[in-house]
Length: 325
Image (tube, rainbow, N blue to C red; front, top):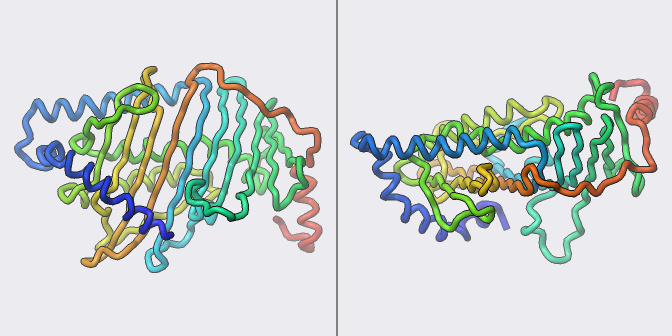
């Protein structure tokens, strides 16, 4: 199933949502919007912005997210990182001080799109504790064996590329926030049902009235997010250019928790081009935070079998005739 077909199967639900919200958005798209409506829209965006600021100050939490981006062949741009283009999901626990990160990274597409009988996607476990990053890459390591690198020693080259995964953990999580920064407050409306965390939920839906402006906002926010990713990981590029626009029915959703954080973020968008609305790409992103500043359990121990990353790099260098890896 192509991602655009997946998106179209859900189009009736998105179309219904767009229809329900159309009246609210219509006032926001006209010059005659009343001062009271404008103030209310600004207040809604301010509440979400304050919740994002609270997220940035959290000391520890549990996270679960996924990212899937697919461009049609004639719209694909150079520089797309294969694992991001194919899809990526991640889950784990983060503690700020002292730094402790436990994560399982699963490349290869959304879990709910894996057909029965397909081989299980390989999981890449990652652990940061006591200033050391441990990561087990199935294509390199034996079972239960991990590469290790001291973060303070990862100053450049491939070592920095591996260590940048720690930085990327925070950068990838910021996609919805970067796009949110670009949204016109008039596009954001309260929605039901409330989020699973018990707080308010807001939706910014793509409509006929705002599709062009929202396309520009999404592209700007996505570009800002891509620039924040570590250079070693590269960044995907959204379709852009004349005739590219968001398909009606797509939406961004933000659900606040009872503690005032942004607990759930969801982006489901499709890009089309030309008068016949030909597929140009799809974007799906989801992030959920729980146990914010609670006591999320840490379950991973420092691995017993480790290989210093510099040993692997020396081996690869020798095997390539001395070329830098």
